[in-house]
Length: 461
Image (tube, rainbow, N blue to C red):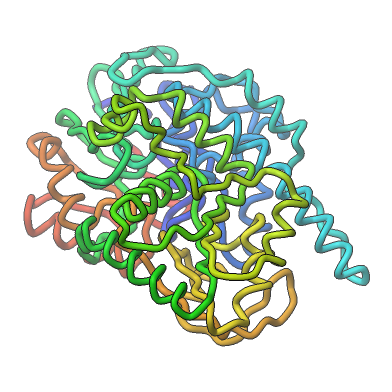
């Protein structure tokens, strides 16, 4: 084995957010992902603002995909002095161009809002600025899938399609002796829009996500039925469906499914608003990367249809137009970011709509511990939105069927091609109630030790 390979788990250990792993090889320092932690405001502030290593010491960052819990601290890394390359797929880079600037704008806007409404408290400072995000963009280096790339010394990376979101990748790093795989987030076979996750070759060590390591997902066709039921129930009662959705992936999936349901006359053609400048920009990025699409989505294009646009769908960029949505009368569907209800325009829509029992809040993805989305999912009847106590009278439903994360069985199947040579698995990106059962399942099926890592834990190969 390679002498001097040292791996430190600096984030997404015991939790699903803040993906970040520090790898030292041959005296060089690399970061696998640089994600933002989401949770209680004070804890998130503490975890996100400081790095457990000097930013200038890093030689490169290897980015699995563009979701903010994997990419969101890159501008802070640059603000602290990092100037090395950031390796990612072309689609991931295009998404980051939109997402990092949007995140910086949200951080600045939220700090301004909090300071305005809490004048007696210590002023909130944004984690980073739009200028920091702009300075991050030139550091990106595109690496297409299946393209071996030298990172310095003998270290070579190669990536495979992770099937999670547009441009997502799983990565294998090798020095010619030891092969270390990093799953990123592993997607699910059969989901709309993007291709299924690819198998990786045999490796020695694997860092693998475990978000849903303790459960099985319902099938995708059940998601369409549940979406149909939620929309029809809410419209019959004259209410609104408020959908917190990640701007990347989930929003586009929902738009495609609503398109299908309206075409098949299974739901009424009520107005549908995608209220997120980021989602609008990201959708344009999706349109620019049809090479990432599955056959079903390419069929829309071949038939001359736009899979992400139809007559009843309205994309909202302008902040004033967003505010006017709260003055509308009659049923409608509002899709807005963020998916865990932690920032962005969705907070304003929740504040105006969760108090009405006619309305439905439809959660469409994993809700991390201590987020507003988790509190709504767990049935709390009073929550704080922008620090203001707010009663929850709306119906709250979850659409787990659309999860872009592989479940326990899918993860076990995905890792099978690596097992002939696999010595150890490191489970990250999961709460312990998910990771511990998955570790036991890996041991039972493959006889391979799986470690549920903790933040700050170090392994030397």
